[in-house]
Length: 467
Image (cartoon, rainbow, N blue to C red; front, side, top):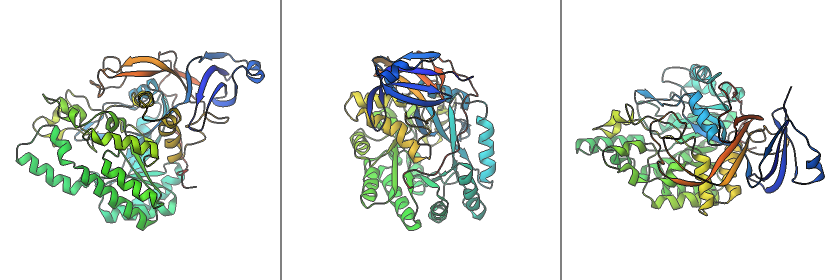
């Protein structure tokens, strides 16, 4: 027996429109919307009624870049699929797209199956996978075709991390050519890893070992150069390109130029680049290690270019790159050598609230908030219609959001499995109140009412920007 749910009296905000409407949910999907107070809305009855008066009713967030249980630097990111998806739900995110990892010398299939096993029966919300391709060869190129048919339609390549995930230009071109033929989307970590390694070696030899130097050696120009090179390789291959975690204004300029030329090139940034800076990396007593991620945090002046890119659609998506490592015992692996600090930061719980603060501060509109956090990631990765919107037939992934509630972010109150917050003490206006995943309450008036195993794997179509 399915439970009908009725959300009454809220302001429904999607990427397309805003309207005071009631939302009827049945069999895990949006059944209908009707203007609040209308005859149609008054006629509806339901076993579960949620009062959303003075609240927003928004689609569940789609975080298209997370790393649960991710191997890096001799350790693993500290959130499991269970803890990480629960924290995501607390923050109003109802779908994550995580990364399955192919190890060098192994098959894509083996890497993907290992991640299916990690996530199966553990997730509180729905999930999908991208595939990290660490070893481009004839066998893995053929496997890419099979994964697209299976609903794993995007492949991440790295121009960084030589000896670990790195692919050279020839391998990248081959993978792009394959995606051009099979409809997949190449996601690129665009940093010149070969040049960065030279700068890392030189910094360490000179005794520059503190976390701040992580940002100094990973130069903005080397992000821009790699972004430019990735765009040109994609152009040669006739393939679309999605550049992940864009942090530098020079890289935004490369994307803007390519998009002005009509190329199918897309960009993502993350909240840490919008709200944090090299000032955090320079915090004393090794505290800066908390903020080590790649691409690195940039000087504050880059923030304005990123917000502008989001307004002008030169950047389409805000994801978190959630890859948490505890300060104690994990980040501390790099004491005395910044290159040994595990790269990654927590954030899956904070994204929707931080972006709402961007609305409050006048950087973006309410609809753009929903576009970059819900609709666009769903479109980019073949989920839209099912995820990312509130419309009849869509999954009932719905958040009741209090736009006037005030909160202070803190590790003492967050739900991510990590011993610090990157935004400790930051005061925000706006907070998630209730979250439904496929019609089932996961967060109910700021209490967790979900369960591990509710979340289901979602096969994805190909990029909906290209159809």
